[in-house]
Length: 102
Image (cartoon, one colour):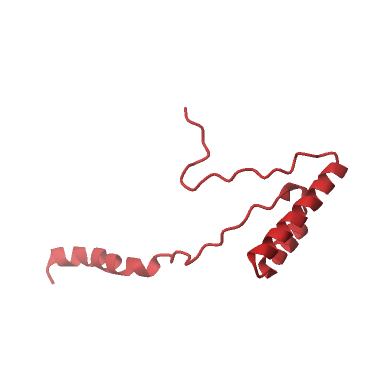
């Protein structure tokens, strides 16, 4: 083998092997819904709510569950003197960064 070919061999081998080390992109990333008044819920309550939402079979069932959850959380907030504190924060759109312009 020629000297310059020997020097290029590691580069060629690394180039050919690099796809094997690449991390596969998730096929369908999970889009999580913002839970109304999640800050007033325990971790267990949030997980139970998510499990109920996953168990629903139709959009109407999901809407009914959301409405009942919202009414329950508003009642809890009023009892704790936190009325108006449960409005969900808007999630920034992807690629729009949360920073302020300077």
